[in-house]
Length: 417
Image (cartoon, rainbow, N blue to C red; front, side):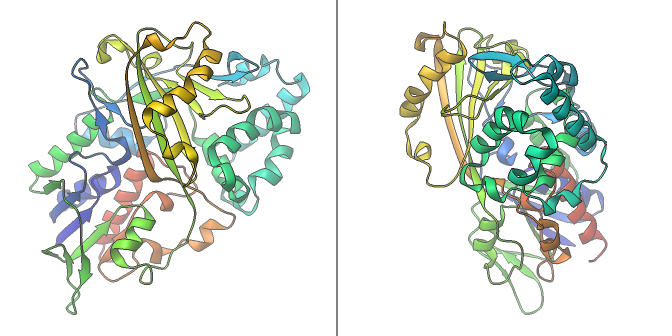
């Protein structure tokens, strides 16, 4: 069969690999000039590795991503960087049972309550039944009120903003269940993985068409599909659901209508390290960013010109005033708060900065979401298939789940479903 795939992120690339391995004729269309989706990288002339626009890593149990990377010759490496939290002006490690026991900002009984609650979640193999509960209603009882108020409520409020009351507990369970202390990365960055997958596809006869804007996707009476001016037997669309609706027509695809958050990052190249850990969750009030990620406390700075690389990250609802700011104004807003993390920090530390934003980055999963998904969501029309981040539920967005979704749809196509 001749198959067109719209979207050169990891879902589309994974599907293309399985399909070319099955002997099918595959063409991948990507609007960006490079493959990788949200993991697309950029590279300063002084760096020898690419860096993602939006911070990325994989977990030690991300089997699909590890297997795919190994298959295309870009196996990951793993280390155990520190995940810390900023609370009462102090950066404290909070990424393991032991660090929780020594976390003195909540009472000892609250630490035990939270530890037991999280352990039970970790031991539950399938937590989809949690989806009937909302996080804001049940999580305080599950992890304890003090722990919720001081740790989880600030994080969840900063991430989901006005959408927090919608979020179901299965999403939270999945985050706890899948997390590992060991984190993985790819030599050359996630861009190297995307390029490795692209090379695998083209070596086996597939076509990659970067920089291609899709203007029309339509079906003719015979059942064949057209993508722009090319004809295909089957078409797979991997763009976010709202963009897929625009391509195909929202009246033709019946799937859940949910809210999404924008991703926003300001990336800084600094002369020296900002903090102790790799990941810093902000538990303080009124900070204008959700998380600080010091890439070079995870990946050796020799790959980035021996400079310190720091992300300042947000998930934001559309219309948030921070999305309307220039990079310069955003940096001015952030500077006093960076000094709260490290009082020695000054603007003179900053060599360069880069700004990125994108819509539809984080789906917001409401209660009962699994009942709204069905095989129709994956194949809404004859010959048309869909796989995107709103369909990997209850798992959160990530490379591993994009690959799994692409492989699931590829199998459906090969099975003739």
